[in-house]
Length: 389
Image (cartoon, rainbow, N blue to C red; front, top):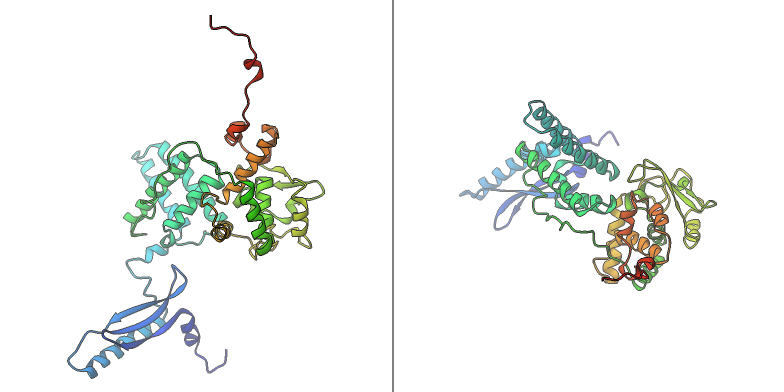
């Protein structure tokens, strides 16, 4: 910076565009200021009231402009007012405040211990989600409907839970937001209009081979690294968030395994998963010259790199492909893993081996993927010579 530059002036054109008068049908003082909710320069405008004299009206506008620009130069931000300043509290801090207040109710015996334990458990999972998805510094004001829907997708798909569990987390978010509304941290409840899921068995949308071939060709041309990510999900049954945490050093090509560490795994257990032979050549090319400490799928174009990939980018990129190929919207990113499990079972791989590859907590969870068309009668029962009379 030269000595002639004013530090305020150099900051002005980053954080705001100074106010000016626009003499249209309605006279307005217009200026732009960075909205910390969106991190974009957004327009603000103030009407200049009509006066009998245009000269006097311009004088009033100049005073308004001078006052606004002085405040802007001193760091004032119109998006942060006395009425909404609490919305710039971090969600992580709001969770602590929520638990503290309900903890006080517990001490006064105004809240059942089981209810507090439930709130604490849900709050802990929400905190894990915030950490895993780079939302530790996200403000309460950015906790909109899209944010809540993505969190519920994380609960239902990434954590592979039931619709009932997903609905319970939705109820918790509604409760948390109502708490924050009463204390002026937010104005509206972003979760209140999100419908609950029917509490039935999770519907598995299988991606047929012809659709998979179209997906394969699309990413082979447009983004080979993302193709490797998709193949790793399909063949190794690794979840979205887990894929963003894996390091190059977790892949043992010579042994034919990817080792999913405790800190990466959804169920907090370290386990190896097998790399099928068809995936090996893709992984070898993907890992060429990559450092062990780099992320297997990094932030830059899904290539190995030092910066962590955000899970949302995976589903966003998948959605772009699905729209481009005009595929069914039911073919979600999570359908890749479901299809991989189903195909293993169709190929006759023992259920226990599929369970271990998917790192399910029980055989029952794996059996939910068994297609009806491959079920066969139990021969012993079928051939019994039993008579009704």
